[in-house]
Image 1 (cartoon, rainbow, N blue to C red):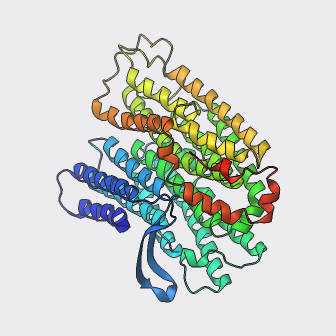
Image 2 (cartoon, rainbow, N blue to C red):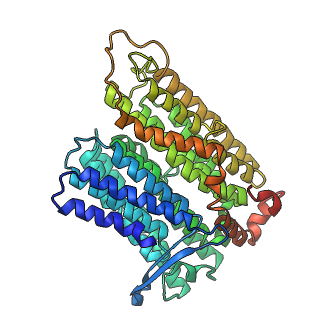
Image 3 (cartoon, rainbow, N blue to C red):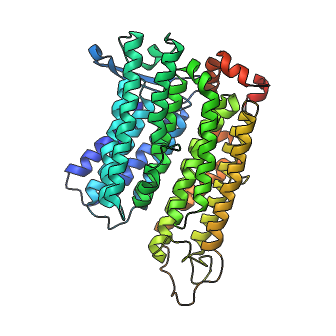
Length: 502
């Protein structure tokens, strides 16, 4: 069942690449659509009261401790559905005349299958294999179909991601060798008995490795160049899916395998998250390129995820998972709309754009959806960004009040730079020297409308967002709160009756 989410898109990629198909985009849309529906069917079979489910096991290279082990829980399931949706959105929103279409769509499907495999893998080496598979496809997607300075951005992405994988592999190998285990099975390595200082060393490798992928400041310098150089579909996958793989890895392999070390480092992690939030928001305010502004905003919003994980209460951790999904949806709609604006107006510069809300000669629907995306990113109630951030802040305040309040300030700064963006882009008088902009076709509106409906629905029905992860996150919190450091950090931890969600 779970293998279908991995191998169906990979087989689709192979078919598109090597068979003489006349309509590769239609085939890719069909494959990604079926994969999305299958992920929703998996969700329908999910038991909210259980942890790891629908497990698959196949012996492989047992002498190396590598076996084909899959499973899904409340941490991975929401991200699987997000991966399926954004893959379909990326394929649908790609240009009809994209060059080398068979290679383009096969690479996107290959990325989708590899990311699903990483979310489902229950063996550390198997996870690493899937984690590395997406490296070359993303490099090619950026370098071949990117914009200005795409080769530089793709090379930078490749080097940073290669370093990320190296650090993670060192941590995995070190854990198995130092523990004397004969397998890389995730479950077998939980509850290891290494000295705390060794756990902290290994956890540090994992934090830096996955911190590059997220990315967190100061490991972020590849992000603005890569996001800006990438085409719109690739930027959606980079920010909406790939960054979430980094956050997933920190929780799954950092928090899950090293709860004692995590408890010790929690205050530092909360501070790191706060610095990332404030840095990302402050730098975004200074940007003139709206795509670069959205890219920098991603750094700050991913910091909320780390804050929720550092506080490690039921509310904060379930909020962190919700923030992964919310940020993926919001970033996707923003990148898509920025791409539409650039294609119709011919620029992304704030000093040039003006009056796009003009109902006759502007882009009124695109502007309205851009306002909705900005409001969701700023955490306006009724939209998905609000509930995710509220859960993180509500759950984190009792443990790290200062860091939480500073992150709330970061939310205010988010509103500042989106007000700047929307005021200069959507409002004001349209330059009379500019003729009518090309009409936005319905084909270009559909992805944004789907994302907008999802953002609004999950904002008014947050239970549909948080219920998947409650049981899993509660188990992770229970395992880690037994550690004395995090218990002492909490001035007045909430009782279980107050941390459960309705």
